[in-house]
Length: 315
Image (cartoon, rainbow, N blue to C red; front, side):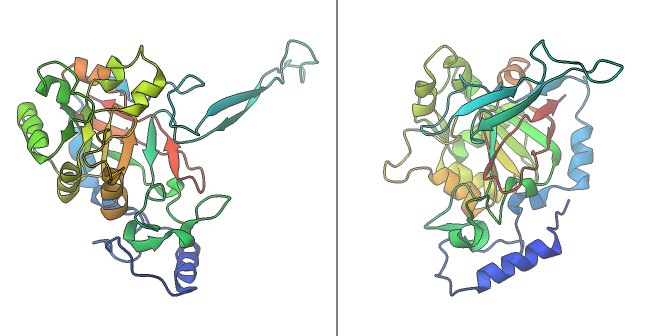
């Protein structure tokens, strides 16, 4: 599966990058070439989609997105507010002979809230993003010019659930517990699986369920999650996306206090692997699911850095 941006978009990017001398980028070039804008999504393929479709045996469908609203835990500075335009407040004249009435609405929200996808413009290294794109070339106050989530291709591929609660004797791992290559390979062996290029890997940490009755700030403040070495290894295996039932995917407290969000930098900026956060893995884990057809279409809202999503797992 190959996504090709419009020719006009490619020309605009080339002009932006050529407009001024650029400092050396701390982000390595993409193995898919200087024009690459989709990163590890290049590993998606018709073959992988057909193989994933063959995993559907039960016809059971799982919504992996949480309900998003005013009570959703959010990072400081983010918020959700819905404004309903009452086109039908119980008064007024219905329209037409068929007496049409209805409602419209306006939604005002950050899109880095609830179950979300992080795009490549979200996190960078020293003002550089995936494939060496400098922040000044992508930033615009009315939406990013490059790496807007509207350009994230749709995915229908194999999803894998790694049950880290089961691996921890039935208890959610403690906050700050980092999953690195050893822990990931052990979880894969327990599930009887090996990774394939184009897979979407989801971690079930039990954190979402354990914190359901807690204050949302506590859910955000600390969590078990992916470590830097684990992120490097997953990227080396060609996975398309990585997610978890936590607000940040990576372990908090961070593995190194002076390296905040380094897993985000590793996946998004260095390797072009999209991140999925606040994935509701509870039902999949309760049913003992290990692999499934994973389907995701990202809302095509131009220029957004993140996206509220509702991925679907089908078994």
